Length: 136
Image (cartoon, rainbow, N blue to C red; front, side):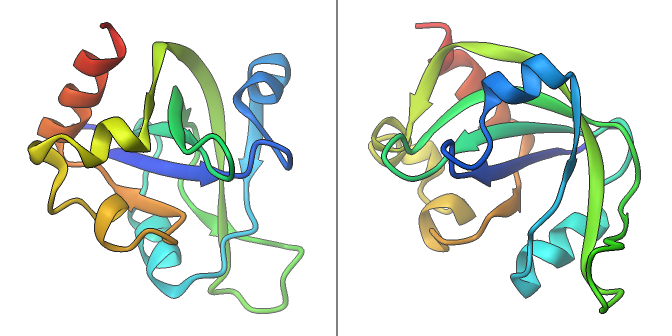
């Protein structure tokens, strides 16, 4: 069974349009210990929301994890891992952080509790709720 994740990126650095155009990319530049721990739990076949940080602060699309985590060869420390991701789709409508904050179903989610965390698990009921909101 696939697990669900959320991966954040500053859209001026890399955004969903670039991923759509390139089809696949290496998800890297994660250095936070908890985010790295989450990345080591990701596996090929999992799905992740692509979240634009910065001024946008919204879930914009879905990508598929197409490799298990592996060491980042650009780093000297083997604890820094990366993985390959593939563009799946844009959400019908982006789901904003404001929409998430005002929905009680999200109150205990790491996105609200640890706002600077760049990679986090998404419980299946939260995944479904975000998809539902995006269709409105």
